Structure formats: C-alpha cells, structure tokens
Length: 287
Ligand code: C2E
Ligand code: MG
Ligand code: MG
Ligand code: MG
Image 1 (cartoon, protein in one colour):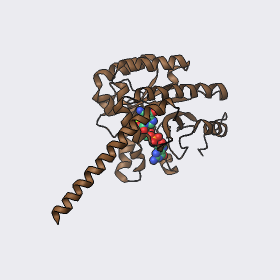
Image 2 (spheres, protein in one colour):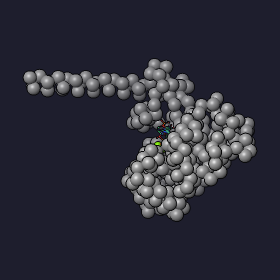
Image 3 (cartoon, helix red, strand yellow):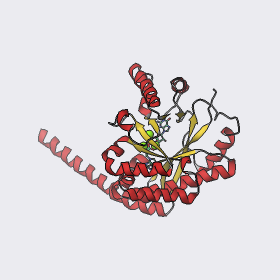
C-alpha cells in the first residue's frame, strides 16, 4: 500500500512538473508577442510627501492583459521575462511610458512629479543597458532628477562589479536611485552608504507587521538610522491610518500604499490629479 501511495505521489509530481513546463514555454512565447501587440500597460501608484500630504510622484508598475491568460501578475511573468531576456525590451517600454506620462502630467496639469521605475537585475548586469536608459530619458526631454530608478539590494550586491559602474553613470546623469524592498535583503546600511543611492523604500512586510511590538521598534530604528545616514525614506504598503500616523511621527519622508491609492491606469490618473492635486490639496489625506 505504501508503495502504491509512493508511486502515485511520484506520478503526481511529474505531471505537475510537465504542466509547469508547458505553462512556462507558452508564457515565454506569449510575452514578447504580447509586448509587440500592445498588451502591456503601465499603471501609476501615487507617493505622498509625509509632512505636507502633497503628491511626491508615482511608481510605474507593469500590467499584462493577455487575451489568452487574462490579467497576469508581474510577480508571475517578470521572473520568466528575466530568464528569457525579454525584460530588457519590456523594461525599456515601461521607462518610455513613464517618461511620456511624466511629460503629459506637466503639459496638462503643470505637475512635476518624480516618476519611479523598477529595474530588473538583468538590466543592471550590462552597463550598455544603462546607456540605453539614459538615452530614453534624454529623448523624452524629462529632467533626469524627475526620474527615479528602483532596484533591490541583492540585485546590486550580487552584480556589484557592473552595478557600481551602472549606478555611477546614472548618478552622474542625474536620475535618483532607490533601494526597493529594503530590509528583505542581506545588505547593511554601512554597505549602502558607499553606493550612490538616494532613497530607501522600506519593504511593505515591515509596514504590515508594525502592530507587533518588535517589528515596530525595528521599523522605527531603520527609519531613523536611514535618515541620519542621509537617505530619503519611502514606506510602501500603507493600508491604514494608524500606520500612516506612526510613520509620519517617525519622520518617514514619503508614503505609498492602498490607503492613498491603488495603482492607477492612465485614464484614472486624470481623475486622481483633478481631485487631489489642486494647489493646496493634500491628496485626500487629513493632516
Ligand atoms: P515593488 O516594486 O515592490 O512594487 C510594489 C508592489 O506593492 C506593487 O505590486 C503594488 O501594487 C503593491 N502595493 C502597493 N501598495 C500596496 C498596499 O497597500 N498593500 C499591498 N498588499 N500591496 C501594495 P505589483 O504591481 O503587483 O508589482 C509586484 C512587483 O513586480 C513589484 O514590486 C516589482 O518588483 C515588480 N514589477 C512591477 N512592475 C515592474 C517593471 O516595470 N519592471 C520590473 N523589473 N519589475 C516590475
Ligand atoms: Mg518598486
Ligand atoms: Mg521590487
Ligand atoms: Mg517594493
């Protein structure tokens, strides 16, 4: 009996793997053709200045509306795009769109937000990709300091030889550089201060757990230490007003999360801006 069970388990395991594989190759095919068919869309999540409640800028986030698979989450397709290299043209598409939106916000509403774009480890591995990204930003006419590039700690540290050169080029070009998901990797602040990074984005897991006593004090010290080391601090994943209050008390610089807004499509952006970005508006936040 035990033997039968074992056998079944093995079979089950294999058929599961095959399914996974099929799904994967199919996804690979669909990804690139999807990019050229215009199935990718960039959505924008507001970031708020903690002290004033005003808009700091937006994070550009990729969405894939695949006619065959429906809405696919970036968590599912980005790893595959990275493996196949498709992330390079896809990443350049996001950057171009984000620059375009930034220009549109200025022309139509007089806004000068900072637009943050996620950069994949694959894009960091070659200095030539940095040059291409610089070219895209230059071509768009957006001042470099109104663009920010986000990368994760481990990405930078794993590829430190090329990424240091990459970061230096970006720094001298003038874009802002942010460490995403800060606190989940294995770097330390003493290491990060040697890199040309401007902003630390505290991972949303810390914000989620801030009701717990220890996470609470860890978060508070991270923010204070980061600020004393000269970084701007963004907290992401803010969903409730108590989180917002605490983070403001602790002196966090910028805030992002569903509490303020979910990521917005280009159409929703217009309404958001009209409602939240008049001269003295505080983006819907009671200060
Ligand atoms: P990330 O860069 O850390 O982005 C933040 C994620 O948190 C986004 O998920 C956002 O929608 C979500 N989020 C924002 N506020 C809240 C909140 O209050 N609560 C919760 N639970 N979640 C919140 P999303 O859009 O699904 O993206 C997931 C990840 O995919 C991103 O994490 C980023 O690592 C990656 N990604 C997204 N777009 C791109 C892209 O254009 N290029 C690259 N390389 N990666 C991207
Ligand atoms: Mg990010
Ligand atoms: Mg990320
Ligand atoms: Mg993050």
